[in-house]
Amino acid sequence: MKRKFKFSQVATPAGDAPVKGEAMGNLKIYEPGEILEENGVILEVGERTSDADITFDYRGKLAIPGLVDSHNHLPFAGERLDEFEMKLRGASYMEIAKAGGGIRSTVKATREASFEELFQQAKARAFWLLKNGTTSVEAKSGYGLNLEDEIKQLEVAKALDRAFPMDVVPVFLGGHDIPPDRDKDSYIHDLVEKIIPEVASSGLSSYFDAFCEEGVYSPSDVEKMFRAALEHGLKIRLHTDEFTHTGAIPMAVDMGAISVDHILFASDEDIEKLAASDTVGVLMPTVSFFLRMEKYAPGRKIIDMGGAVALGTDFNPGSSPAVSMFFPLWLLVFKMGLSMEEALTAATINSAFVLGLDGKVGSLEPGKKADFLVLNFKNYREIFYYFSEPRLIAVYKEGRKVISLPRKWEDT
Image 1 (cartoon, rainbow, N blue to C red):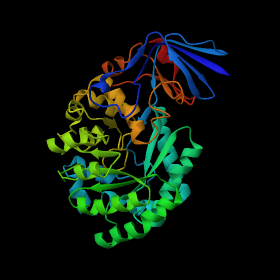
Image 2 (cartoon, rainbow, N blue to C red):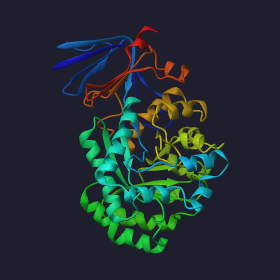
Image 3 (cartoon, helix red, strand yellow):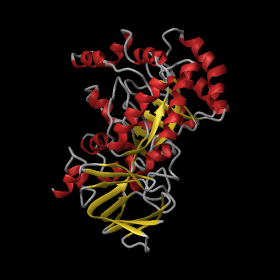
Image 4 (spheres, rainbow, N blue to C red):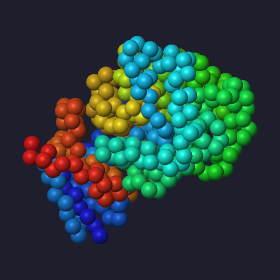
């Protein structure tokens, strides 16, 4: 059955991903706009589309692509409210980690949780994300730091992808931290010789990720991990330069990393090399906000140099418990100097590229999944003008309404 959706405006990025440089500022605007879909796939988008069996009238409303969260740590156990209070009293992220908190406290809770406990917690968080407009999301492991518990997290992510109306992409974050019960060198050896090959052969993830930062792993440590991951057919991603300049970005780019994430302390030389490649810089401004840092990643510079950026919440219990993509979307514009169009491109088609979903989601184009948001606006610029309220009316996943929010908003 063909179904048509009518809007006052449809706003979407378009074209091949990653969208880079000046092109990030280009959106296709249909005013009025229509989406024609069948069996969850978009057939046509335009001011006028072909006849349909049924029509849904959203005139007076805006449609944009479902948001894509390209950096998220969904499957973990426990919370870190005590550490949050310590942060508010002035303790830094690294000070808390050195005192035995941080990632290691979540590792303990995650190892102790059963598969079912972990799944139910991840499912509840996925619902928070979905009702805030995220229709595709990454789910990193990294809170097991041993074979058994990394596999458990990845299996939770796979199960969530099957059970929930959301694309969930498992990412193996085996190099997240040094396990509390291991020394660094022995864990790297085990990771390279055993854990990476086992995870790769399991088919649970197509990606390997690591955290390169002072006090965690050095660029040479990560290079060893990356070589093993590539040897076993995994694509590579990197957390780096969140708190210090590590010099790891050129290495990651040269090795073909899909993305480098955080990158607050990237140098101009790093940015120039990144911008000349297809490696995407993933921006997560909610981390700077939550940790009360004055510094944000150089997204504006990356775009001006011709590069591509994407957006993630970095949803995790320690540095960014953010469940809505709209808040980091607003921060891109108000704190980082991106245009409204660049911000939407980062949060949709470029994030889809990072997750390997760019041929399926991230823009409203024929052949892609009918993943879109209906907002009580007439123009996409209102998303940023009314920055504290996205005014979501409905979330559609593959043409099916999966979230319907209070209709009273339509009367405003």
